[in-house]
Amino acid sequence: MFIGETISIVVALLWTVTALFAEVGSKRMGSLPFNLIRMAMSLMLLAATLWLTMGVPYPRFASGATWKWLLLSGVVGYVVGDYCLMQGYIIVGSRIGQLFMTLSAPTAAITGRLLIGEKMSSLAIIGMLATLTGIAMSILSKKEDTVRLHLPLKGIVYASMAGICQGVGLVLSKVGTQHYMAALAVAELDEQMAPDGALLPLPLYLSVPFASTMIRATIGLVGFFAMLMLLEKKGLQKLNTATHDRKAMWCVLGSTLFGPFLGVSASLLATQYTSTGIAQTLFALTPVLIIAPSVWLFHQKVTIREIIGAVICVAGVCLFFI
Image (cartoon, rainbow, N blue to C red; front, side):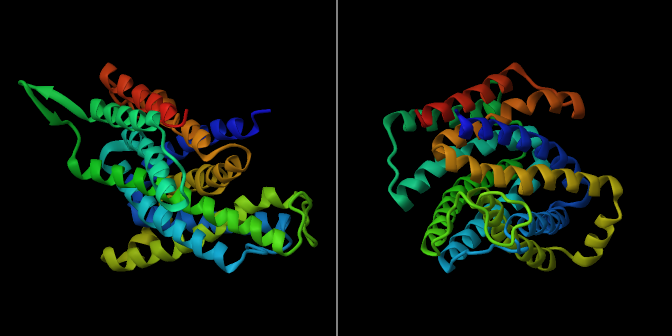
């Protein structure tokens, strides 16, 4: 039925919309206030969802191992990864930022190999080289017989770190979700049934991705608040100013709905129906999907070289998981 593949394509579309909202919002209020407010909004939405589907507004039945792995995933994927991503959006824009997110696929495969023994094929190596080649084509330009970066190095570093952190975070979250499902089995709960007290009778396996995302968002909120206090002068004042920017707040809401709430939860759900490799391959369609709206909404100039580079990136990710 290709359920996992269909969900993965929907995730790519959700992340495309998220990136567009995030570029505008993070430029208006700064990456740390933006991420902090986004985490707070996502926690409220997730708590309401779990109250309906699990009967309580928190991750019910989660074991200690579940919390450990998902909190670690949240630190890597949310606190470090999202901070770098928003900084990348501010410097190089959402289109180029999403191009670097294709690094998450080879990173996930390498991390999976080191952490849980997943094997890398020869095609995976070719796919990795193709992905890096596509990125290089998009960020390098040839002027006067010399090859130079046509993007700020700082933006490239931030965007690269975002892609790497997403790949590592995906593997860590998969391990955490597996521990969550194991905890349900130990408690002798049927994952196909709704738990007692649920107001919305959804089977547990559909609620687990939202519960897992809530654990990650919890450490995300704590981490971003700590970073705001440590890295920003007059952090609370900047946060207060950000909340009074109506346009930016709408962008935060849009980014939250399509990103940490629906997008991340749907990505975890997709991995229950298909392999992580196939899911990550389809997630990687975002750099191509975002080209048209970036031109339309932000009037960004896109060269043929950059389009070819984006297509090569996606093709490289596809090779990675054949």
